[in-house]
Length: 82
Image 1 (tube, rainbow, N blue to C red):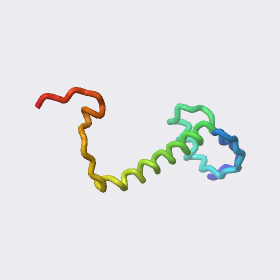
Image 2: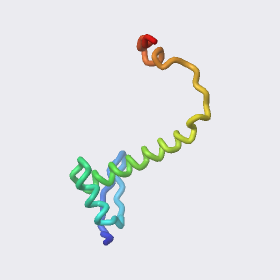
Image 3: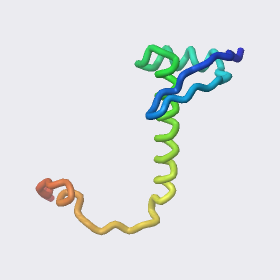
Image 4: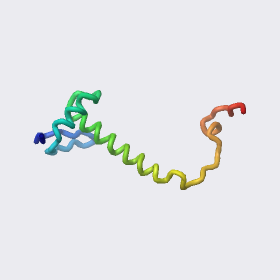
């Protein structure tokens, strides 16, 4: 069942919009999310969606560039004994 409701999406600039959101999907997200409001859960979901898309784009470059260096030096650690 779809639900028509007005949700406030808060970020730098607040934007008011009307969304048709699947009741079951929202209820499931509300049960698992640490946030308690619909607005907070939807904002968290949007941020997670954007993060996953950025990671997916980065993974397209996997194996396409050769990196030369030492991770221990980069991280400021002493080299492990071999």
